[in-house]
Image (tube, rainbow, N blue to C red; front, top):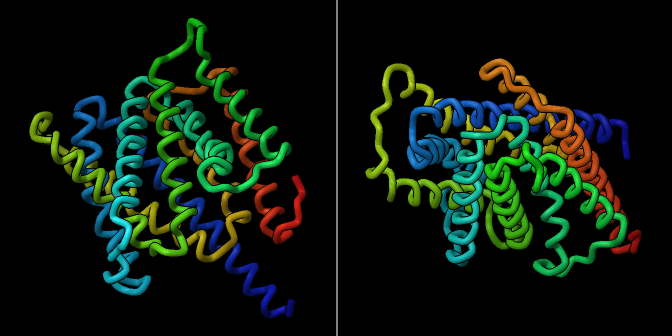
Length: 301
C-alpha cells in the first residue's frame, strides 16, 4: 500500500468513526426525546412523527446515492417484513422507555448483534464457530444480568427492550442477505415508510395535539432519526465495519448522560456489570467476524 493510499484510508477511517459517533449521538438523543414525550403522548404519535420527519433525510440519501429510482424494488414482501420488524422494534423500545432508564434499555438492545450471530446459521447458512458462540453466550449472560428474571428488581418492560433487539437483529440479517440486490436507499426507505403507515393507522384513536414547544420536539425527534440513518450509512461507506462498529457502543455514554441530566437516572451495579459483558462480547464477536472476512474462507473457528 502506498503512503498516499494509506493516508487516504486513514482519513476515511477517521471520518467514518466521526460519522458513526455522530449518528449514535443522534440516535441516543432521539430516544431521550421519545422518553420525554412519552410521558404525555401516545406511542403511536411518537412513532408516527419519528418516521414522518425521518423521510426527508432518507430521500436525500436516495437522491445523492443515484436518484429516487433506487427506491424501486422487485422484493416488496422483503421490505414489508423488514418494515414490520422495524415497527415492532421501535414500538417496543419506546414502550420500554416509559419504565426503564434510558441506559438500561440501550444495554439490553445491544444484544441485537449477538442475536444476528446466533441466527446466522439457520437464516443465512453462515457457520458460527465455538469462539463466536462463546461470545454470544457471554453476551446473553449479560442480558440476563440486566433483565434479572425471577428477581424482585425484574421489570417486565425489559422484555420489550429485548423484543427490540430481536426486531433489529432480523432487520440486520435481511439487510445482509439482500444487500447485493436491493439498494441501501430502498432498504432504509421502506423501514421508515412502513412504521409511518402502521403508526398512522392507529394515530386518530390516540391523537393529542402537541402543546407549546412539543411541536418542535416532535420535529427534532424525527429529524434526528433520519439524520442518524444518513450518518450511519456514511460511516459504513467511508470505513470498514470492523473500524466503525465498536463505536456503536458510545450510545452507552450518551444514554447515561441524558438519563442523568433529564431524570437523574444512573444504572445500578448489576446493570453496569451486565452492560459490560454485552459490550465486551459484542466487540469480540465483531472482531472475530472481521478476522474471518479477511481470511477469505480460512476456517478460524
